[in-house]
Image (cartoon, rainbow over all chains, first blue to last red; front, side):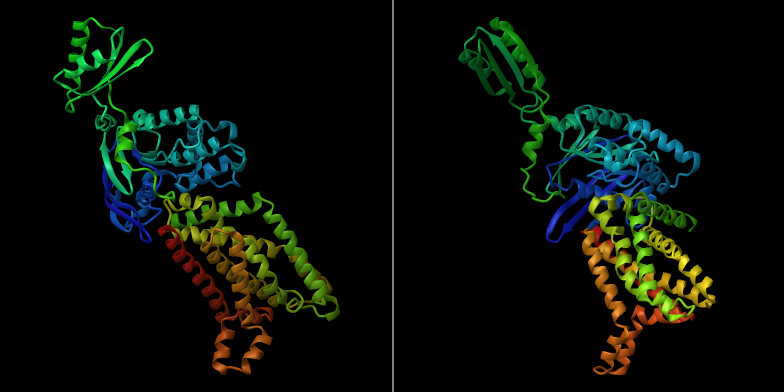
Length: 319
Length: 249
């Protein structure tokens, strides 16, 4: 549905996007992750045809965004980063305008406005002027605009930015629901959002893709993936540490006292040995007769992966 | 093509609605009418002249009035879109950029035409007091509208250059002022004494003042129409070039 080949964007001497390639197929919800200034918004602006790339190629539904921009833009709905809308219009006027720009007229236009009003919970403010709205409503107004023509493809730049936790939850639900039928690319720096809605995630740093996979695959890259944590009563720390270190599949072992308990973490010696490790640890516990109240295998944490493969925010400007 | 016009109309409608949704339209129209009235009846010596003509007392002030009023109408056209970020929204809609440029231009031009049409009491007064040359009145209005269009084109271009409306306004006034001055008699008189005649004619030929003159006298000269048309065309084309640059960086 969307292919991006070798995209490069330079601003003066700065390379904001540096050779990005990926593909999104129907039914995929792609999360775009990265620190501020990594090139997420720039990539999205190029895909939506707002900005020309310095080099590289983008096709949307088979239409080249540079050679056939109107056909490509027709397939997409876009929520820009700052969720802009015309402040002198009412919500209803603005949505009507957006529908008209998308070629809808008459009853089809009314239906479309009604549909997105319900979808984005805008009934209460429909006849208010945009500049009197709170940030959350303004955001949803712009989101509604991107959905007005029921597009096959949705490009959402930080769709939950500035929303309160309830609204965040609703927007995530919406993304997940729509993701069943549409292609969605959305950017975020909230990692739990990726786990909640994406079928695939791309991590981008300094204009380059540094990871591309399902959330589970990305989490497996974490150092902690597959490690086993254990909490026991009435045993000395040294004993726990020594006993666990003896295991053949164990790598690094850490243990410390927490009140009357000892909590320990064993990392597998090699990646992918998580299951063996867990049963080995369980054996030790039952052989030694330790009383335990927790024993679990960690899936790995996305934020560990994120921190280990992206570098701290060094770009001053938000591109 | 049909679809192209529909897009232009959709954009124009929104833009025109924007004027009337805010106090801008009403303030502008009131000030415009007050000023035209003041210039015509006080500074223009309308009564003292004892002629049923609108050329001197009415139309001859328009180049000066428009100098400030037209940029104040057009200054927001692109500057505001750039400042508020709606430019990104507008240009990712399935439309060609020229449709947005022309749509915005037509909306503002139509607004100026409405304001100009509301000066009809001046015409009625003249018709009541005397027997004006209707042809001259019509050609004066046509010329005035074309003049406003030329200034508006310049303003739209300047509005695309910056995201600050005030800067757009000031630069537009200056550029329009230069376009006006280079054909104003005191300036051309000065030039005659210092530079070759062909150059004087060239400079004069670029002036809105020079091309507006014939309209006031009741002559619609094809060359004058072409002149105003090319100022508008050139401005709008340059706007598209500027916008391409804005999107690239």
